[in-house]
Structures are given as C-alpha cells and as structure tokens.
Length: 40
Image (cartoon, rainbow, N blue to C red; front, side, top):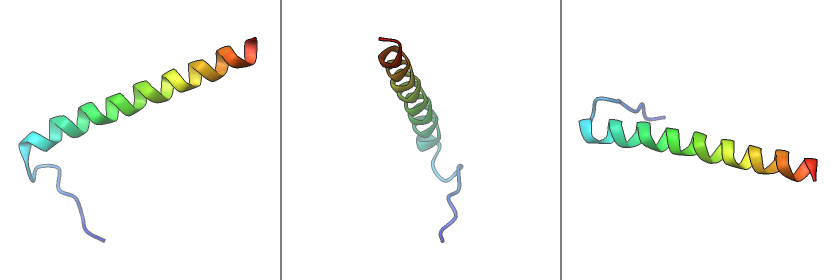
C-alpha cells in the first residue's frame, strides 16, 4: 500500500478538504430526503 502524504502538493490539500465537505453535504441531503420519504 502506498502512503498518501498530505503535504505532497499544497494545491491538493484544499481541494481534498472541500471535496470531503461536499461529500458530507451530499450525504446529509440524501439522509434528509430519506427522512422526508419515510414521513410521507
């Protein structure tokens, strides 16, 4: 297995951080949609 170094490229750290936030936001949206679907 290759070990990923976070400081390998400074440009990729911010992109990776925003990507993780986007995934979390999408997961919350999907969870909210399922919650609404169960109520109706």
